[in-house]
Image 1: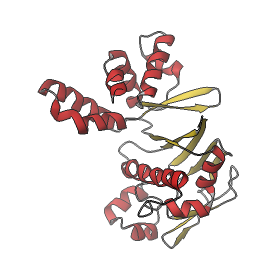
Image 2 (image 1 turned 30 degrees about the vertical axis):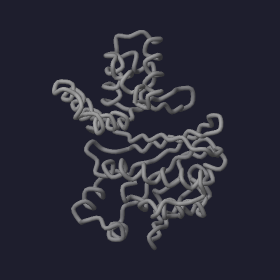
Image 3 (image 1 turned 60 degrees about the vertical axis):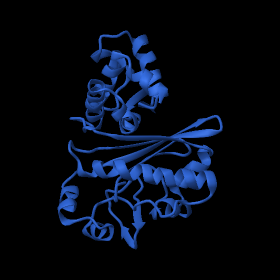
Image 4 (image 1 turned 135 degrees about the vertical axis):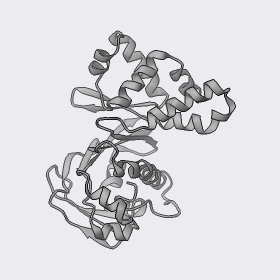
Length: 270
C-alpha cells in the first residue's frame, strides 16, 4: 500500500484522478488539455498512478487510453480509515466516495489482473467452451470473427440475439463483444426481481473488451466494460461480478482448479 499512499500524496495526481473520475478513458493529450501541467509531468504522474494500481492504460491504435481503478483506494479506506484522526479520515472517506461515485459520462468499469500464463492460453480460456463453463458457468457459440453473431448459453438457457456480436477479434491480443440480451427467462434463472429486471431492460446494450498484454512470465489482462448510462443498474452489478469471474479464470489457468462454485452466469453481476 505504500505506492498508493505515495501516489495520493501529490495534489497533481489527485487532480488527474478527479479528471478520470469525471470522464474515464482519456488520452494523455486530453488530460494535459484539462490540467495546468506539462506533458512530461502528466506522463510521470500517470506512471506512478499506474504503478500503484490506481490507473490502468489500454492501447487503441496509436493512442493510449487511461482508466481509473478505485480498488486500491477502497482497500485503504476499509483497512486504515479507523486509524486516522478525524480530519484525515474524512478526507480519505471523501476521496473514496468520489472515486466510487459513477461519473457523469462514460462510466466504464475497468478491472486489471496479472496471470501466470501465456497470451495463447489466456485467449483459449476466454473463447473455448471447455474453459468458460468451468470458471464462468456458460458457453459462447460463435466463430470469434469480428461481426459474427454469438449465442450465450448458461443456466440451461440459450440466448440467441442478432445484436449479440463479436466487435473486435485479434487473437492473443484483444477481444470485444456486445453484452447479452437481458430476457425475462434469464432474470428468472438468475433470481433477479421484477423491479431490478425492469431497470436493466430499460438500459442500452453494453459491451466488454479484453486487453491481453504479455509481461515476462505473466500476462496482464484488462477488462473494460462500458456503454452504461449514468446511474446504470447493470454497472452496479458488474463491478461485483467481474472480479469473481476473473478470479475464477486466474485460478483455473494458474492451478488447473476451479473456485468452489462457478462465478455468476452472464448478467448476475457480470
